[in-house]
Amino acid sequence: GAVVSQHPSWVICKSGTSVKIECRSLDFQATTMFWYRQFPKQSLMLMATSNEGSKATYEQGVEKDKFLINHASLTLSTLTVTSAHPEDSSFYICSAREAPRRQGPQYFGPGTRLTVL
Amino acid sequence: GDSVTQMEGPVTLSEEAFLTINCTYTATGYPSLFWYVQYPGEGLQLLLKATKADDKGSNKGFEATYRKETTSFHLEKGSVQVSDSAVYFCALSLGNTGNQFYFGTGTSLTVIP
Image (cartoon, rainbow over all chains, first blue to last red; front, side, top):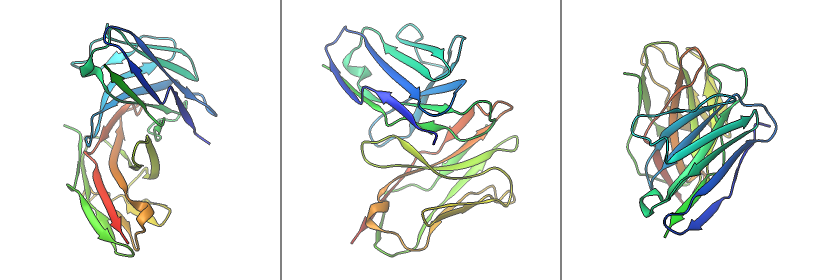
């Protein structure tokens, strides 16, 4: 149980294009999903917290207009990297917490590797 | 502020050696504590957890005990295998909603035959 999927697992795009990454909780409902970014050999950097039916909460320094987050249902959140540039190349990982458990673990997706040419 | 501190890596061990990865935390409340493992090119997997003081989390031969007096949650395994080679992250969860989640910097482990 507690499986989180991400799609796509990797994507290569041209500079200036937009890329959408999906995060799904497959066997549980998640009122809250999280989006992280990970640089090589570094820890995870929380980008935003996504709450179903409301606006995402972004961490300081993360551009809301560049990283659009939508949490349309209890099992799906999407991250859209708009007008991507090479510096946006990274490993993006989502996670979800099973509703309504407080302080329960986050379950992570397998990650999406984005390469912007 | 609230944070997690892990021992720096990388750690290289021979197969069947004893493993300890230190993790200490600073928290204003009563956190839940977790260890996650990340294999190359993959996302994080929950390895074990503990939700209150003196709890011991265990999974796949790994153990960690929630020590409130020393604010620690050290990861141990008695006999490591090559397949344990990965990056290990200590984390804590805080807050009424548990949405405050803090990760350590990760410790890379390589086990050689």
